[in-house]
Image: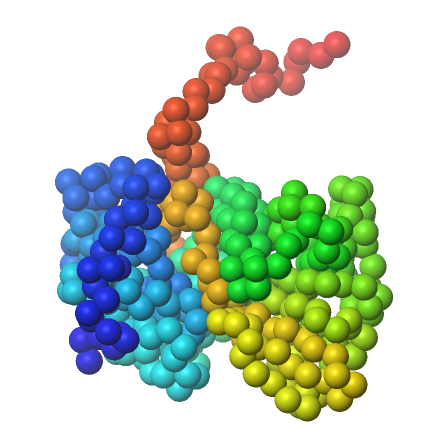
Length: 420
């Protein structure tokens, strides 16, 4: 297949939305101009397993402007914007993504892009990489390198590296400051609440909002919920993060206790079984549960279905489960990423920095490749100078000026001889 999308007739609508997002992605636009002149990706094939959104479309356009052949499949069955997929397909991109696709279709799409033998992979959750290693070990050996966008994927890849299973180098985009300090905090913080509100239209102010996980993403969701007037409760397993949440003014307690008082729940941990059936048993009538972690494993959705005496869709992206005693539990976006399943994901201005990291890192990897060198298999950090370049361009496009060190200040910071 050249592509598998829902409806090519949505292409015009998708084009308008992609252009709108592009208007807020100034760093990617600057890189697109540069790549058009330099053609760094000529004769390079890149397979990308990403959320098929308007922001991703702008990344794809920048890579193609630099000469790359880009193959795109979805990294989540519910995150695909069908109009965006249609627009990219109309522009000649090999796109394999349909919103709501089932498990078998999801993996058939991954195999479709891998069949074209890409030199580089771009992943969001490591499904592309894990499929290569599980099903095509010979292809893992021949793949030159890749990048990983999100926390969950980096965790999986680091474990692969520890076990000696990772056969080619992956650069962890997620771990750069311009990604985790902005995309994770500001992007997830805003978009997760956006998804909850779009799905339910509930008033956040005055509600007990339970946030599971106080990492970069959880901090963002907690701070935005607090800003909307919520009484925020944090659940954690990490002592230092729990202490930080407490010092930030949030109530901290185990999920067993939070389940009894929470009105809205949002899991943001990257781990499984955060909300289990024993927690659901303790919840109030009308409790709303959602997930902003990458995979749909944080909420025991199967257990919830078994508990329920009946279920129905009461609003788009809202399933209502009635328990034996009549209590109603509302699940958002099937327990998948609520910010993409029930909304549009991160704002384009935030994804601008994350995808600039992807583009510059791919440029770095292809430059090494064309020189006949490559990184060792394993998980690598983005070179600091690339991240600094992203920040510099972002500040410039925002009209923000900063100071520079004087020669004396620089000398002082580089010297150990001066003291009190």
